[in-house]
Length: 346
Ligand code: NCD
Ligand code: ZN
Ligand code: ZN
Image: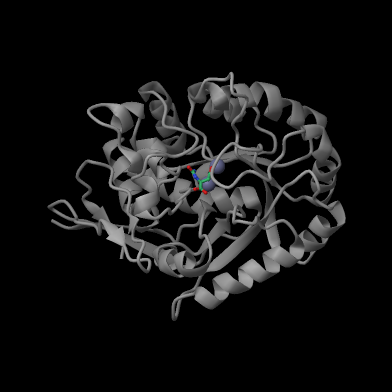
C-alpha cells in the first residue's frame, strides 16, 4: 500500500547555491521542493555589501526555472570591515534576512571571515538593535584544537561570550553536529536557534571512515561519533521549535570531492526531504517532520508559514535517486545515505 504524507511546503534555512553554471545546475533541485531558502554568501569573492547581495539575488532570480515559486532569502558575509550602515540599509530594504559569521579559515571559502571578534562587536550591536539575526558557522580554527572538538570549543570560547556581550542579538547556530551544540541551544532559550543537516541526522564518522574513506560524506563541521548523531536526532524529532532544517546542501564538482584534498560539503538538495522522511519514520517520529522542515524556521525568523503544501510518497520498494546531476563538464555527485529510502518527494 502506498502511503502519503502532506506537509506545509518546507523551507531550507541554510543553502549553498554557488554562482554561474553551478547555480543554474543546482537551483532547480531546491525550488522543486522548497519555498524559501537562506542563501549562504560564501562565494569567491564573498557577498559582503548590500550591492553584492542585490547583484547575487538578481543572478539567482535570472537562473530560476520556468514556473518556480521560490524566494531566496539573502545574507551578507560578515568581515572585519563590514560597514554597519550598509548592513542596516540592506536589512531595512528587506534585502537580507541574516548576516553570516565565518571564523576565518573554518570552512569552504571562508578566508575573508573574522579572525579578531572584537572588530565586529559594533556591527553585532547594530544588528541586535535593528533585529537582524546572526547565522554562525560554529567552529574554532586554532590548529591546536582537534577537528572533532572545534564546535564544543567554539561555544565556550566564542559564542557564549558574544551572546553575553550582545544579549539582544538573535543567533542561529548553523549545522550543529554535537550533543554540546544541542544542549547549548536547549539551555539558552532566549534568541537562540539551530539548524541541522540531513547528513548529520543520518550518519556518524564511522559511516565516513570505516572500510574506506568516503569523500561524499566529508563536510564541515565534520561528522561526529554516534552519540552526537543521536542527540541531534532527538532534538530534531522532539518538536522543540528552536531546531529546524538547514540542509547545508553544498555542491562541489565530483572531481573536487574525489581528489587528493577533498572539498568539504555534501550535495543533498535533490534527496533531502526523502532522506529526512525516512530518518523521521525510522525514529518513529514522522509526525514531527512538518514542524522541523516547515514550521519552526519561519517562527524563528518571524516569517509567515508557507500556504502551499508538499506531498511525500512512501513506496513498497526502495526509491532509486539520480547519482549525480549535470553541470557542464563537471557533474556533481548527489548525496546517497547508504541505506534504502522508501520516501520520495515530487
Ligand atoms: C560548505 C561549502 O561547501 O560552502 N561546506 C561544508 O562542508 N558545509 C561551507 C559550510 O557550510 O561550512
Ligand atoms: Zn558552515
Ligand atoms: Zn554551509
